[in-house]
Length: 176
Ligand code: ATP
Ligand code: MG
Image (cartoon, rainbow, N blue to C red; front, side, top):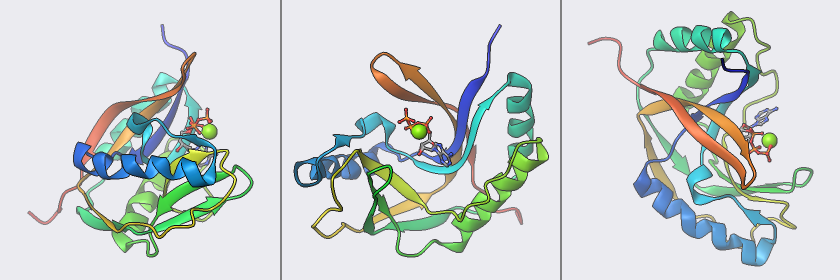
């Protein structure tokens, strides 16, 4: 017996990249707000929302059919969204394989009867919530060799939101 779960597709940093991201949480000193717990750092590809197990099965099966190559992602800019007051790290250029992956996942979501995302995609890793302002320092340049994507669950706990990786799919070249 399991009720609905709140799911999203994401890129999950490996431990090395996470290690490079964690010091950025110190931006809180200048920007205020709440830093994201280090274990929560991720890049959302497609937010699904609350769904039943049956829909999750559909999503997983459809995602099994995705054949897209690994790609390099350069994280090199900070951004600030004033309404949710979120400070994030993103990329000045969205690589086309990332856009292709997001497009494929959008099709997966739509194919399983869910509403696809209509807003333009802005790749970002949330660093701070409820922050006052944009960082006044330059962003580092971090190179991410993206070789997988995940399906993650968002869990509300008394200690705050927690994410759990449910499944991981490797990116691969189809012509071999
Ligand atoms: P909380 O909502 O409790 O502050 P959270 O935003 O980290 O926590 P979720 O709301 O479960 O957790 O979201 C999981 C991920 O999906 C986050 O990266 C969040 O930014 C993203 N997300 C949530 N809602 C949407 C949405 N409507 N559209 C796009 N992305 C979303
Ligand atoms: Mg949220």
